[in-house]
Length: 207
Image 1 (cartoon, rainbow, N blue to C red):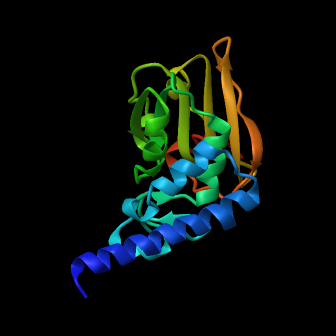
Image 2: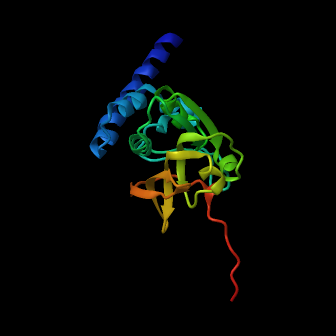
C-alpha cells in the first residue's frame, strides 16, 4: 500500500468520524445551526492533538493533553464547541478574543466567521496580559471567576461566552457588557474542562 493510499484512507476515516460527530453528538443535542455544523465538519479535530491521541479525537468528552500534575491543556468535547458557537452567534463584523484551552481548535473554528481574531492563553488572560478591545470574547473552558482585566477588554454591548463553575458543576454561560459591567448567565449544564488559571483567589480565614 502506497503512502498516498494510506493518506487517502485516513482522510476518509476522519471525514466519516466528523460526520458521525455531527449526526450523533451535535444534531441530537439541538445543535443545528448550519454555520456551526459547517465549521465543525470542515476542521479536523485530530489535527489539534498529539499523534498518540488522534484516535480519540471524536469521542463525546474532553481529551486532556496532560495529566493531573501538568497544565498541558485540553480539547473539549464536540458538544461544548457546538453549543459555544451557537450561543456566541459570531458575526462578520466581530472582533474576537479567544482565550485558549491549549490546542488552537476553537480559534480555527471561528476564524473565517469574523473580521478579526486574536488568541491568548488562559494564564496570560488571568493575569491581565491582554490589550485591545473586542466585541466578542470566548473562553475555551470553565472558569470560577472573570478577572477585571479581561472584563475590561470587552467593548460596551460586547458579548462573552464561556464555561463557568458553579457549586462544582460546569455550565455554559454568556453575558453582555452593559454600563461597564458583565453579568454571566448560565445557559445549560455541560461537561467542560476547568481552566484553573481562573480559580477564585483563596482568602485567609481565622478560626
